[in-house]
Length: 115
Length: 115
Image 1 (cartoon, helix red, strand yellow):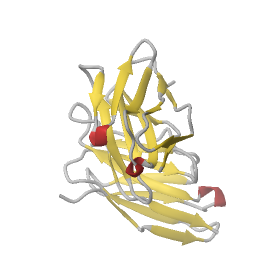
Image 2 (image 1 turned 90 degrees about the vertical axis):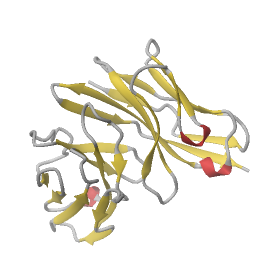
Image 3 (image 1 turned 180 degrees about the vertical axis):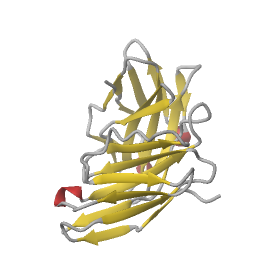
Image 4 (image 1 turned 120 degrees about the vertical axis):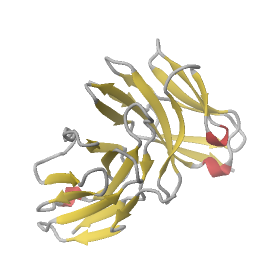
C-alpha cells in the first residue's frame, strides 16, 4: 500500500514569507508526528497528533510554528514569517497508534530553504 | 525528562569487520526502544525494536541490539558489515504516559564502511 507522502518535496522561500507543508499519513494510522532535521543534526520532535486527542505541541520552537490535522488524515505544518534558521528537512511520520504499534513510518521529507 | 545519547557521531569501519553503535537513554518511566536507519538520499526506516520479552532483538540486514535495563543501553551490533550498510543510524525511545506517547531521537551515528 501507499506509504507516507509529503508535499512539496522542496520549497524555497524568502525570509518573512509563510509556508505550508503537507503530510498524508498511511490510511488507518491514528498517530502522526512532525520532526525537523537540520543539516548534520538529528531529528527534533515538533508535534504529535493521536487520534482526536489534543496534540502534543511541546516541541514547537516558537509561536511561528503551528500544525493542524483533519481527523485522522492529512496534516499541515505552517511556518509564519520564515527565518533562515528554519531551513531544514521537515519529516512527517505516522504509526498505528498507542497499544497497537509504536513503529513509525516516515515520509520522504520536505526540504525547506529560506533565503 | 527523557533523553537519548548516541556517543559516536561518526564510526568508520572496514568492510567485513564487526561494528557496535552505542545508544544510552534516560527516562523515569518504562520505554520502548528503536533503531532507525537512513540510507543516503532515502527516508528513515525501522531497523529493529524492543517492546518487551527477550532483551536481544534481531532486525533487518543482520543487525541486532540488546536492551540492558541496568545500563540503560540499547547498543546496535553487526558481526560483519558490508559497504551497503553505510548510512546514518538513529536510536529512539518512546514512553507512554497519560494516553500520550513521548518520543525522543538521538542525534544519529554515521556509519562509514571502508572497502
